[in-house]
Length: 129
Image (cartoon, rainbow, N blue to C red; front, side):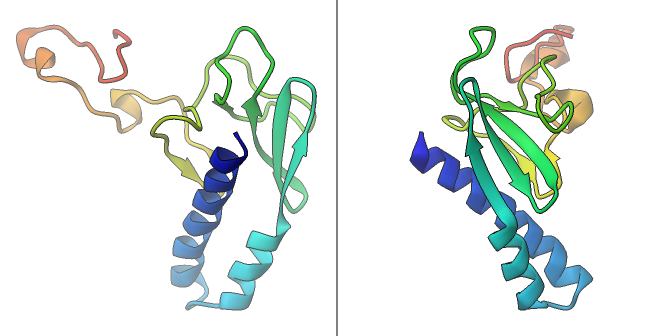
């Protein structure tokens, strides 16, 4: 999972670079400062990812209610929000430098399958609305 965590950290840094290049007119020192502030702290159940003095989110590694690699928003400094995962580091996911994106689905910018045209509102991720 180390490779996947490195890819997640790169995605976080890349998203910040896209935002900062517009906001700060490509101030590369700010971008490098942000990338350097990202830390990974491994606990018994979760891997906590911090950016500066903020918790970016968590990656599950030992909570049986989630799959290994599930990305979770932070509920507070010490614990993740346990309502639903926001993706998985072993699959396709979408994140921002500010934290994991909200729960995926059509209302959150997800895509619906062609079944929606037939009256079945099944989402691409398999959940039903």
